[in-house]
Length: 277
Ligand SMILES: *[C@@H]1O[C@H](CO)[C@@H](O)[C@H](O)[C@H]1NC(C)=O
Image (cartoon, rainbow, N blue to C red; front, side):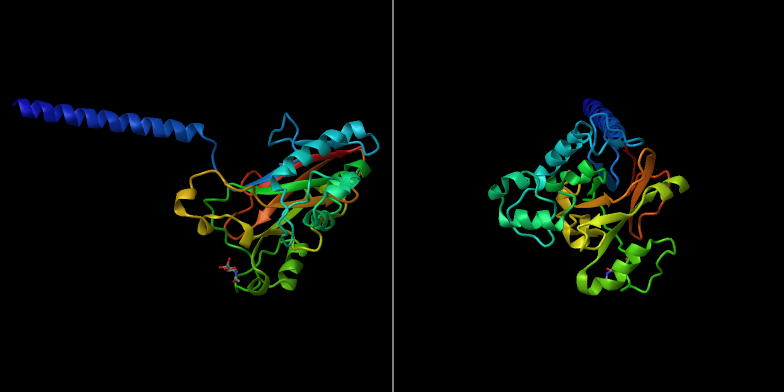
């Protein structure tokens, strides 16, 4: 009899423990931010919010853009390296043209490859032709399915021309696969106002090379639930001649077979407002 009582006690204790643990798990799941492949927009202001990040610049007024310049320098610091890479992962941030003697050779090369999205050129803000940096984040549990011309699978008709050309000129079986990127005006007025844009480094395909992504298939299983250990890959978008005096809604997105486009989704998609006065 006594033994039975103890058994019942143990069963009750185990049940209560399991209940508590699942409740804690549920709460953590609700509280922790959801993880999805994120396309981050930089620079960000202090009061950054996803729905309406506004980047406002008056080219001839350093007071209006100097804060963006400083924030980009700050943001790019984690990418600083003296190891040569082809292409360099980021423009070298800390030493601009004035203290060129302090620069390493890889830094000089990085500055050339990422021009005009560099500290040397104040990331274009001084001339009212700003650069925006896009960073791919939360990819450590993702296995992307790239678009390429190597596989016989169809390419969606709405895919922008600049990506098609990059796919044709750099076949995946030779140059590797990319997570492609495009930016454009969100609404029809924005499509007119946005002007020409260039993806930087300009001599490189507009996207993130798969070989550099720390995606789930390339990291140990135990690392998949941890935050990214390395800062995500970058690409810059240079707005060469945005219409002055209007707010331009810009939408950027990545292109892979497994992420479907939805104008309300945040997965692999970013938007911001650009206002050049
Ligand atoms: C091309 O795309 C297909 C489908 O996304 C993928 O399975 C393949 O690994 C890609 N690369 C090459 C070189 O075929």
